[in-house]
Image (tube, rainbow, N blue to C red):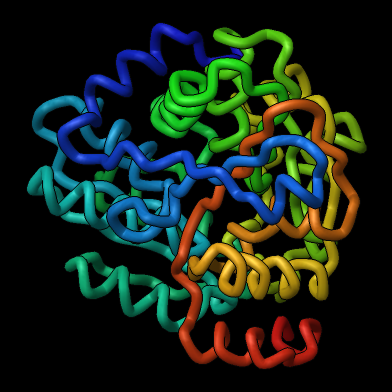
Amino acid sequence: MSVVPLTEIQLAAERIRPAVLRTALEPSPGLSRLAGVPVHLKMEHRQRIGAFKLRGATNAVLSLASGTRGVVAASTGNHGRALAFAARQAGLTCTICLSRLVPANKIAAIEALGARVHVRGAGQDDAQREADRLAADEGLIGVPPFDHPAIVAGQGTIGLEIVEDLPDVETVIVPLSGGGLIAGVAAAVKALSPRARIVGVSMERGAAMAKSLEAGRPIEVEERPTLADSLGGGIGLANRWTFEAAKRLVDEVLLVTESEIAAGIRHIYREEREVVEGAAAVGVSAILSGRVRPRGPTVVILTGRNIDPALHLRILNGADALEVAV
């Protein structure tokens, strides 16, 4: 089975309710005028730890068998922060493996939550190999950042909230990386509102899931510096859940440039008065650039706010996007 059933997403919603915020769904007058349809923003960047990842990590930790000693994961930043938070709440040790591409502010935030951090290699695949080694050597339980049914079900709770708050939703625009978010959201939304379209958006520089869907199978893609750093990394050649779910449930996938991501970050700050990281801005970037033309009431998920403040200021001041990314 590649699609997590609605019942599992509903169980996840009950399980994580005490620990996770039910984030707001707010209308965006400016984007609505531009798109010609009502556009709403799902404010997951306001989540505790500043990213949607807390949903999946919390569900995964609360699903572990009693007697678990500790957890380990590879991360591009936000999953590590979420897992460190959830593990601390449950009284478990936590180790996070990251590559050298992960911004320093995200590494510091993980360490501040008491997690042990290993920085290894030039990309997410290197970090994953280190996480696998530690799991084998130290008896830790691996909690993948996306390709796991408990992670997918936890992220899918966003889809439940979207349909509850906007029953006539017709388009949901979702940042696309390893696929845990889009697999969960699509499973929930399409189960409750089958006519709704799911649009995945990633960056042009190193979009592993987009390239894998294009190839018809999981493939390796070079991880490159990008403003949307949280969308970096591979999907795993042995992917069991998110690739097939994305192939079956996602209606459209598109890519945005670094300049378009920067424009999205600026727009969200200037027009919506919200601070978001590059990965969170890609859906808005797709609307601003005209790469997506939403149909009917539309939701764009703002996934995280964990951008380095100095980088955010440079982008607001018009710094060249490629220069910032590299």
